[in-house]
Image (tube, rainbow over all chains, first blue to last red; front, side, top):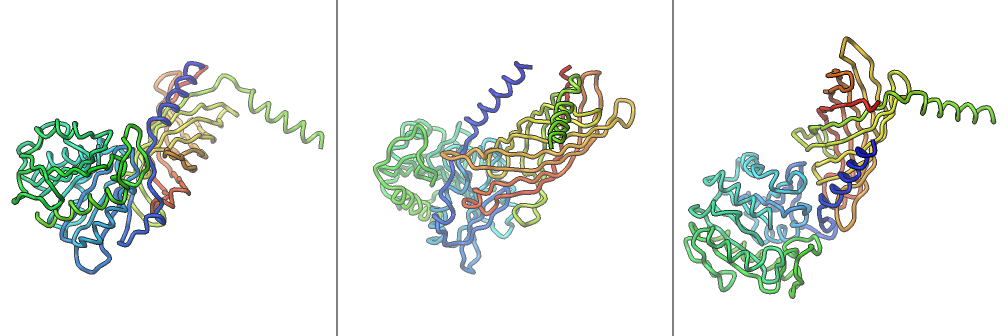
Length: 251
Length: 173
């Protein structure tokens, strides 16, 4: 009996320590300007304007991060580029590795949208790459945010890839991004946020945000193992929004 | 007054210690299927829960139970303490009917601050004795759970689900 109780205690403590997700800023604090709706499976953010969205962005959150943590920059991106609808996928246990294929259902849930891109932050980006690998013709582009693929599965993919990373990232380090360049199509190093080489298809554009870190790609506070940023979260997310906006506009 | 206190004390002791040979340990898994999210009907899979309960007999059919449950649901993960009652009645050789009502109190696993969560869970179904010491259970019910603080972070903070439960019970003595 004591052995069973001991096992239960160890199980409970392990789960409690390992399964904690980083919480987001509150919705009041985010002060969103666009239309937010939500189900148990996804968070939908779209423009308030009557112009129908033409691009759908299936977004996978980082591992053990509350999926609402990205709403602030997503909201600003939509304000600047109302043709995009962003669907953040809620993952089992907030781990995208358990829900790789959930993104393909999203594309079926919104039949009015014909242009789909996907991507994600950290583990979310890695799993978005797995999604593209399984459904290569369903997505036109892939956006890695502080992320890279686990293997060379997309080496020959003919879609457009944008990889945004930060120089002070302590988790997806600049060295990690460099090492995984060989796993992706032809690398183009961008000198500024508009330095795209057209056509985008069959290329990977790399953009580094100087002074940014891993956690500031979302609004969830300081992440263990991350480095200290030398720019504000607002500055980092503004840079992210700009480069994504230019990338999408050139697809 | 003194008689009432003595009667209640005796009753509690009688209930608590009259049967020491019927304790069970129950391990179960739930597949959670949505009915309502916040105030809207919403079907589909909502997640899973895994739990373990200790059951102590109060009389031949009724047991109190206490345990813990881990849930992987829409807002992420939570862990709750279970306390409740189980009623089971034989219906045929090796087969019993069983019903359980559980109150849950716990935490949604967020950092830096965990959020309080609570729930009510009911299940009814069929138990089959696979041996003299163990039974398997298959059932369904209703499960309501809420995380009031999560309302500040999300549009959804409480749910009503239709779980399908598979469990295994073993007699401890």
